[in-house]
Length: 388
Image 1 (cartoon, rainbow, N blue to C red):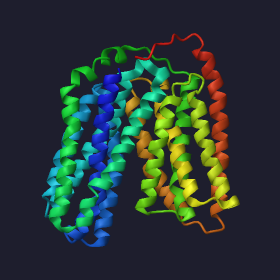
Image 2 (cartoon, one colour; image 1 turned 30 degrees about the vertical axis):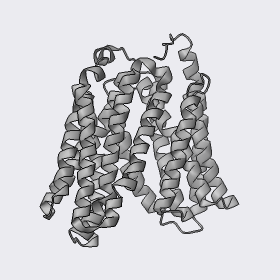
Image 3 (spheres, rainbow, N blue to C red; image 1 turned 180 degrees about the vertical axis):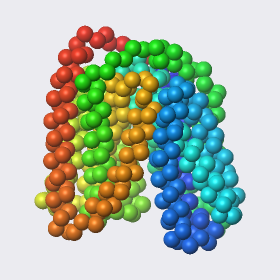
Image 4 (cartoon, helix red, strand yellow; image 1 turned 90 degrees about the vertical axis):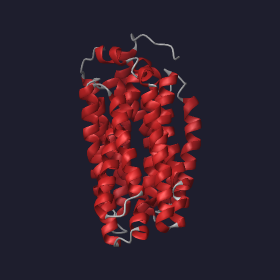
């Protein structure tokens, strides 16, 4: 199991590195390299990023219908790689559109499928799933952290040739997940038959969990998007680097904490929500420094999102894991729209919005704690499988 999780995490890290590498120089390339108008470039970039989240629905559906998420990952990543290399040599607008469309489609197929593959590879170790997903999520962030630093440097150089070199490097790294997944395919699908044949019965706890996941996703990412805008801490790449470094350090702290038996998933989520609530109250009331708030948000993300993903394997039918993940990803488009609308709030209205978010976080904490008590009762007679 450790080998399968490691292979999927490494593949995801390379895929995220190539994707965020492309994103870091894409708009600079079309503006400075191909001399597009700034308005056209911004519209193109916005459509590109939104289409990825929309196309994850196709990836989730195919992953669940075929029950072969690893195969969908290979197909999707191959399409992405072709799109990146096409982008490296694109000169005409139509070629850029086709290349960007290929990247969006391939990424949309890959994103929910790699998570579904992770679930299949480790479903017999549900009591360690917080740890497994945290390692996987750490790989995502590590790839995303390195990409702008390495490939983004070619955007600083400028000129079409410099951008193209960056895209070629991104394409080479994008090829690696396909090689890893294809060469280790039999190892990665070893548990698929047992996974498909496991029994699953819907229950009130599972239904309630699904509702709470979606509410939690909305509240957390809404706060995550709004706080930098309200605090004025947006934007600087140095700020983002500091946040990513803080998150990566906290991953190393959280990984051994996941081995503590009584540190249950609900407690981790509640601890992260409490941080979000404190930031939303302390910033307007106590004039919390924006950087301190951003660092607390980075830590809260480490505690909430991997744990949230790990709950899906425990409460969702094997037939629907990919679709649930794709819906959670798709929701971020709507959340960004809502955050954009709320960001126009006046200076006097901003504290009220943050206080409401804090109250919603406290309500979610209460809901997760109550639900966890029912969950404990259900787990009393469940056999424990050793981690190996």
